[in-house]
Amino acid sequence: MTQRPTLLSVTDLRVGFPDGPKGRETLHAVRDVSFDLAEGEVLALVGESGAGKSLTARVLLGMAPPAARTSGSVRFRGRELLGASRSGYAGLWGRHVAFVPQDALSVLSPVHTVGDQLAAAVRSVRRTGRAEARAAAVAALDRVGIADAARRAGAYPHEFSGGMRQRAVIAMAMINEPDLVVADEPTTALDPDVQEQVLGLLASLRETTGAALLLVTHDLDVVARHADRVLVLYAGETAEHGPVERVLGRPRAPYTAGLLASLPPGEPTGSRLLPVINGSPPTLREASSSPGCAFAPRCPLAADPCRTRRPTPSEVDAGHLVSCHRLTDVPDVPTCLFQPGGNG
Amino acid sequence: MTPLLDVRDLTVRYPGRNRRSAPVRAVDGVSFEVSAGETLALVGASGSGKSSTAAAVLLLRRPDGGEVWFDGRELTALDEAALRAVRPAVQPVFQDPYGSLSPRLRIRDALAEPLRVQKRWDPVAGPARVAELLDTVGLDQRLADRRPHELSGGQCQRVGIARALASEPRLLVLDEPVSALDPSVRAGVLNLLVGLQERLGLAYLFICHDMAVVRHFAHRVAVLSSGRIARTTTARALYPTGTARPKTAVDTRKAAAT
Ligand code: SF4
Image (cartoon, rainbow over all chains, first blue to last red; front, side, top):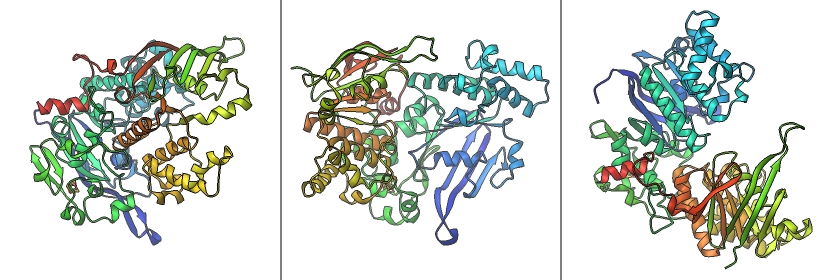
């Protein structure tokens, strides 16, 4: 891969929420997360519910919940965004950065036609006449494969099917040719076939415009198909980070290995049982109060240092970072650390 | 062996959009069988009739046509009183573990409720039965005093399964039981269901949109399309072959291993 200029640079990002008497303490939901995103690149943020992946994406978009306490740095083309005022974000929104949520209805207004909303998006960043904006809206719907776009532009969001609505949201996100698209579980609510169509559409639009994509997902198959690099979050911390072929192909973090091991195999096997990660992810409070590795209660390799010190990411290979105290003891095929069990 | 569940020519209609339009056939002449100890998966896109079929098997509503036979009896011919006696044997497990439990009830009461409703609650044997149910689904006894919101998604779904087991069912209708769960938790719940099936000889009607899970978990698969069964096949036959299929995370792992 050729070296492309950095578009987005996140350093030591922490996101916490007030806790304790008078909110003087902070429970951290995201801890010391760092990554760079190059122009045109696709980075997947993966993790289970509560791992902090959506929250990270929202902080980048300036959409953190009001109570959130953030620290660290988020730079877009060198400009610091963390702590920037609403107007600081306003210049980026729509023009340079676009958002595709899981639920299309959270960004589409029910009382305006799809065409009007797309046209308004165009006019929010460019001075164009109504007719011209309208034509751009219809063309954008056409590009995302909505048949009879001129007529459909006059429809309201509720008149679209789920898949069509998500296409319309993508049309809206891409209409001003942004440099960065942040997509938060963009297809989770759709049927599997429609999921692939919508993700394929997003990929082809990205190729034509050269936009980078930050893809938040819990689906490792989606990562395998659509991302260049992946950052695996566990309990708000980086477990593993690197090129997709390395992280999914030769995982080094026990947590990544456990996730991969628990997927149904791609071919028939003798056993109907799947390997599991025992236990369940820590609550925010548990993760905040433990001094050690957040994965230690579930990790088959956990040893003394794991319970007293947090591991920090270290490079095991070019661009491949892993947070684990016992890196040298992780077996070559680490998925074999996990055995079938039913009572996790 | 006669099948435990035998669905013949099932038809479910819904009223059309307005008074003049014809009723919509959500399920249009669907037939299938499920034996004890067997898992039949129903797959298909949304609107293909999976959920309507499940609702008809649970007799949540009477079908508009066709017959549902269970354990040699025609359920569709029974009156409400006779049905009540059969109902405990056919239990649902739903997708949303939080939504299917009452937020106010402690877990022990949620598990006792089916026994109380069926007038089978006994002050001595009851609590022991609740403890046994928690054990069966791999939950710590200490969770009995908690309420659903204090449990993780996976724990809640185990409670949902325990609640279904309280009625000593022979068939579970599993409606997307693992779709809301994280992958690491999903595997444990699927293993639990496999173990229960092997131990208790339960029959499963399994609705799921994730084909990787279906292939692994089901014995046979009925593919629904527009309210009809397009084909019924073994789950094994559904493993994709060739290179035309979409790449998965498991492929990446295998490619790196060779
Ligand atoms: S640091 Fe220890 S507990 Fe954490 S993943 Fe590594 S071996 Fe497991």
